[in-house]
Amino acid sequence: MQRWYVSTWGNVRRFRMLSGYRRVALLVVLLVVATIQPAGSPAAHADDLADLPELGAVVVDDPLTATGVVRTTPCPTGRVGADFVPIGIRIKVTGRCSESSSAGLRVIGRGLMMGDGDVTADVTVLEGIERARISLYVRDQAGPGNANGYRLSLEPARGRAEIRRTDGETGILLAERTDREPIPAGAWTRLALRVEGGRLWAIVNDEPIMSAADDTYASGTVSVATTRLGPVEDEAPTVAVWRNLRVTALASGDASRAPSYQPPAPPPAASAAAPSPAGAFVPPVGVPPQPGMVIVQDSPGQRGLIPGGFCRTGRGSGEVVDEGILLRTTGRCTEDSTAAQAGTRLPWLTVPDGELRFELKVVKGFSRAFLSILTRVTLDPPGGGYFFGINLAEGAAFVTRPRTDQGSRTLTQRRDLARLLRPDDWNSVAVRMNGSSLWLILNDQPVLFGHRRDRRHRCRHAVGRAKRQCRRRGRSCHGLA
Image 1 (tube, one colour):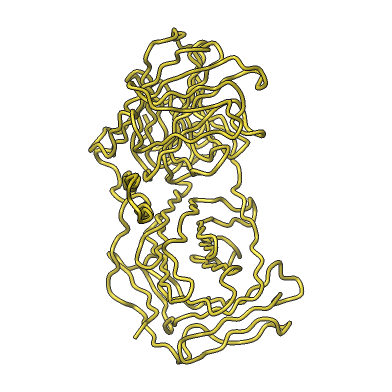
Image 2: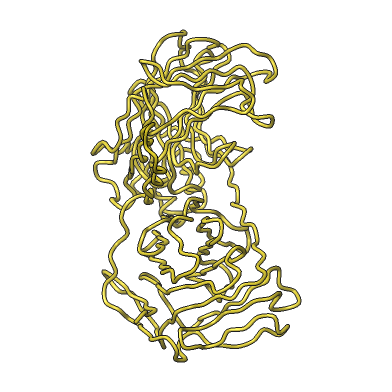
């Protein structure tokens, strides 16, 4: 018999449990999903290179001479291209990749998820070095077009380097150096970007040159990019070759945030008649802690932790049935609601650390169904907590941290979960929490990892301007170099 249950592990904090969970069935006719936008943060320049973490095991070592971690994809305009050559992957830029993009190309790593660790690659600019920018990305959210993540960029002819947080079409400069020696065309340069929690270090030719602090993005893939600066419409070429991409874990880092790699499925043979299988699912970074003893467990078909009821508009309801609780929505629950939804709150259930697990089946309206889970919600003051959202039809999910005064911040997201969901059957959903680490688990497969550091932690590990701000505000900065 299927169950809902809440379980914990390790050191169990204070819990207040009154009853258990049940299976959930959703009857969805109309559901409107609100867009969650991550909040921005001010730029922080940092030049403190202390405490550079040591490296551990190598996770990926790819010469970039054939399809592997990266692959070549054509640009719609035909003015940007990438191909494999004997020494690496060559990127040639003569204009925009698409009608709305800049003059450049970002090649995204496949099958790779990284929280903490080090990404290193060698690069040389063969043509157009006076307008070239070469960039190495970490925690890239792997969306189309402009990147969301962190990048180390070098402009070889100008001797300029920067660490930047990229948020779609905008970006926040985190650290900058303008005193580097210019690099001639044809010379190889080794770029590395090392990250641990909210700290980033830039390393050029094995020399640490700057560091920065920012905790907007907790995990993502890696990418390399070549950009041509200046006017986008002319056809002057900029050509760079990348080689020897290496991803390494930290020697003494948090194992749950170590890089993970699942090689993509090989292409089918030309003579094969059967269609090729889908590539293996890429798990998030690290491994979530295992649950311990069960605190609450309920059987379907009985009243328990989740109450039934009706919306004031009559267009939403929750009803206890034999298989669990049936949530139904055909419109707004209240006149001022911003979405067509049905749900419930459990203010008497406290889960500081542990796992919340249930089973879900969409009876009708799967193409418009959206599942929302809020955890660690504070009632006084109201708001806060963490929001887990799953767009079932699109196979997309995200974790955000709502804040009543500053909007919401996206901790992690991905859009490749459709293969894990069963539209016509029961799906298990679990949220696992351990301190500032959060996991979303679908059908027993970890799919998202989010990490949020509190202010005390950020101050303790602050560098540069952030460290000076901590001191002015009287916060603890013990342990800083």
